[in-house]
Image (cartoon, rainbow, N blue to C red; front, side, top):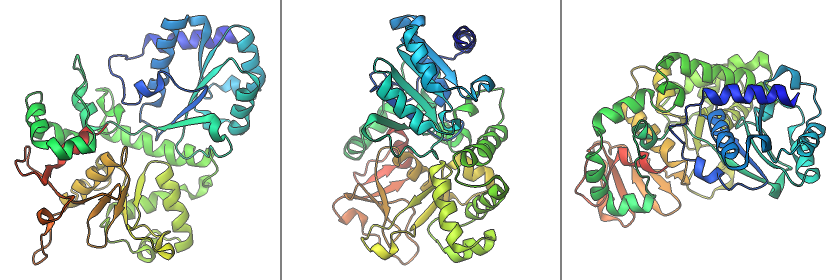
Length: 396
């Protein structure tokens, strides 16, 4: 069995594109004994595991490392705890497991391997919908997003473009924008990113935009959510309907009763579906900024996860929705977002951001308030409290 798995590992590594490393890669270099990567289908989890496999083989020797995926049909009925013990006896010290959520008892299995096989480090990848409760302090869990705007613009470069903290962007956005503008065409780049740059698979010239989106959607709804027990296969069509309805709904105009009616489901079931779709990386729910416990369950705004997915559903989307979707998607990787009643975003309970221009007749008081910023479409802004939208794509 081990020889068969090593042969498949070798085959995968020979075709591995290792010229580009995602933002999480450095975090995984010195991971704990049990670490996991979760993320929606198509985000690049398998590539990350294989890149770590290649690096560990180079550092420790190929005999001490093994990559396996639970897509292997001959692993379906295997006792992974016993197998891990056998691997450890054979000298394997680094076990990388892909598609871990497809194991029916993955939590207990990982826990037992962690407790019994003391000399082995485990790095796994799985669906964001999987429930890791019960692994407790044993597990260090990382969520992998799609490509940031920075990452897309870094592909093919000898050195990746730098990323910046939110503090750095707010303090020095004019200088940062000027320096970055010397390295690539910002306007051309952001147009490409909004329509087809979020999913790593889109960068493969052999795959079309529609094919990449459909593969990710179908796998997430029909396999990930079903495998993890979130929804029965016969009801996944209703989740598709919820996504279709939300793609045509103003994210800031959340009327759950109307959404439920349009989707043909009960309001109670809608709450479950919204939570599942967010866990699966297809939606992002923005909570209210106030502390009213009765309103906590109801999201203030509901966004399709990324601009690529929104445009897939609606090829001629409202530009204001696209701007807000990009802002939410890029910030949520590193920051905490909430929505204020006046259509403004609260970030980290510290800053206020106005992404959509105020309607006619509304008071525009942003530049008169401390910690308040307007997000603008200009490539470079000379105004200290007007920050270009595209720069928020350089947070990770």
